[in-house]
Image (tube, rainbow, N blue to C red):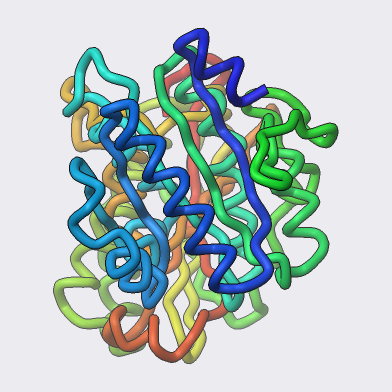
Amino acid sequence: MADEAAAHGGLAHLAFFYRDQAEYLSRIQTFAHDSLAHAEPLFVAVPGDKARLVRTRLGGDYGDVSYGDMAELGRNPGRIIPAVRAFAEANPGRRVRYICEPVWPGRSAAETCEATRHEALINLAFSGTPLSIMCPYDAGLAPAALLEARFTHPAVLQDGQPLSSAGFAGPGLLPPECDRPLPAAPSYVQTLGYGSDLRPVRRLVTAHASSAGLPPERAADLVLAVNEIAANTLRHTSGDGLLRVWHTEQEILCQVQDHGWITDPLAGRRRRPADEPGHGLWVVHQVCDLVEVRTGEAGTTIRLHMRLGDVRTWHARGPSQPAAGTARTPPGSPG
């Protein structure tokens, strides 16, 4: 159970399902009180207005608390594990606590799927780490999302007590929904095969981003991300790759496919690599609004999403439709 894991210095990762704001704030305050009582630094990352509510509830009474807006940090859930690792490493020799709400009403199906993937992978990334994580879930979410929370959390909070989750599958194991093939790209996509020369790849993404109205600095990030993925095709596989680009009213999507296989489920989610030309999947996760990866013996597809317009405005409007990006690496190669 979660308390046993904490007692033995390991990871305690639990979910709780809240029915209203009062219950939400009460459970968070109790968790923060325990962190204060044990002199454990606390990192709170919940979305948007909830972050302001929590700050107000905790005030200045809880000492060593850091805050993040999950709507920004977790816009792409692939960014969360590196942020938590950085917080833990900034407090060496101490157990730390983390409140994380990566799924909330209004997230798209693609975003919820990737947030669920994150919840599964965090068990793998921090196995044995002195870290206590509590993840609030709105009880009004779709039943599938609540079942997936039980699948990805070793423990759930019930009546204030952490109990083993009967639905937990094991560290790093994903709900089946998270590994199903991505929805097919629309018929109007622009398609480009690439080999040793990546200049046509960069030109196509640049032109499409411009025609879709993506701001120049965001377009540069997207070109960088696609180039990193395509470069991995050349670096880690013996074949060519295929790029697809399209956009909706809300976002531009780039999908890369090749015959490689990313065997490390945490590829791009560890600390920033220092020894890799470019920064591969790590930088892709940092600059894109959503990254979807499907990989196996048959090959890899990575779908990158980049929202059109101001991201802060998007948070006020609500979620966009899914987007795309790709990966590639032969069995045993780095991602």
